[in-house]
Amino acid sequence: MEHAREEVSRILRRGRTERWEEIAGELNRFLRGWATYFVYDSPVHAFNVLDWHVTERVRNFLSRRHKVARATSRFKYNEVHRSLGVLEVRALLR
Image (cartoon, rainbow, N blue to C red; front, side, top):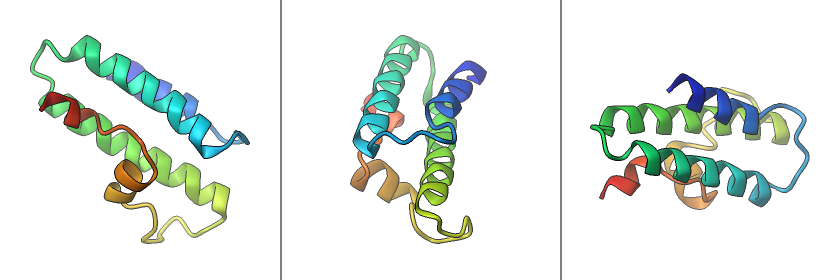
């Protein structure tokens, strides 16, 4: 889990200027590979924790990029995982 959180933070590091689609694609490739590797255990809790971590990191990344307050109601969980196209890891369990 710690490695996964570090990798998400690395992908969403400050100063990235690529288009959001490229960053989201890289993030999704990592999340899909990580989930595929760990799906054989009992991953429900770990997948939920990682989804929330990804949501928080994306929210922080996009808040900095768009210069909006961090306490904003933009970039909620559903928007991040549906509208912005970030993979929801726990959806792979179904």
